[in-house]
Image (cartoon, rainbow, N blue to C red; front, side):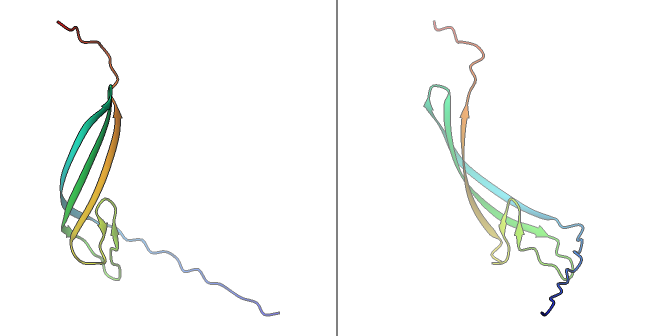
Length: 93
């Protein structure tokens, strides 16, 4: 019966990985019900700079997007659902 040996190489540590980008966010927020809101937004991101050490390429930057398509531009979207806790009542005049 043949034996199989597997070798696991030690992981390498890379320090000083940084990325900087500019981001433009446009959004809208609407009240659905009393004190319940829904917000929608779109994001346009442009890469400014990133550090790339030897023998290592950044393929994904958290918060930006994938970087292996080399466009330097990212897009995104998001939504929020929020509830405003009424701490006091307005006195209507």
